[in-house]
Length: 298
Image 1 (tube, helix red, strand yellow):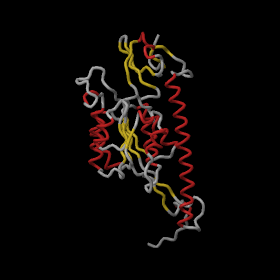
Image 2 (cartoon, rainbow, N blue to C red):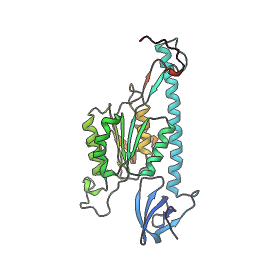
Image 3 (tube, rainbow, N blue to C red):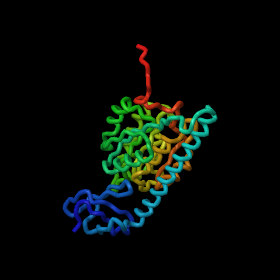
Image 4 (cartoon, helix red, strand yellow):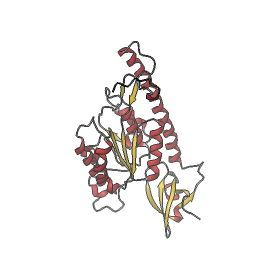
């Protein structure tokens, strides 16, 4: 008997994606992807409970790719530290090792899914990327973002949650925003952010979810968006892009092919435009003020 919290797959889809049962309404379950940003409904008769250690094929591939992407980001972090040390020694030959401090780009992340938000915040923490994260319904994102931008003053904005092409849209035109669940809300939120900061290199915007209207998001002012091929995107794809922007030097342009290939969904799921990084280093290294022996002068 299927119950809340169970991990399930859909028999009609070949059991490729693993879901968690969020709620049950009569004979229909509302299910949410464990790895992919997918919210769906399915008849209880179509669901098959699975062992947590034996996910669907597509879910398992996504987990493997996510592990590889995390390892790659950590390698990039190490290479960044090494290149920083070389640069510091060139600027100041007498500088000691690690005699600089880091200022990664600050992220403001709005997510329409509380569980995915927490997974995203955990990844930001692992990568030491400064972030302010908020669980916000997609329809409320434009107004919430309008209030938060002057307060947080981020370098990178992430707008994500749930989206999708509607089964019975008013118009069967993929160019029309009415064909999508939440793309119109993401587009409006992007416009709010871009009106706040028009320079694409001063504020990097990452927007969209599964099957979002990629072209409309870019036209509204996003630097990176989903989903060019209207495919499912991994829950952490927006985080990988934001982390890459946060940890790329302001002297460098983010390599588009590099960052997109590093995501789980690849270029079918996310795309974007040339964008400068937000990461800075400073000299000298910050002092521990509790250990300074200072003689007051006033």
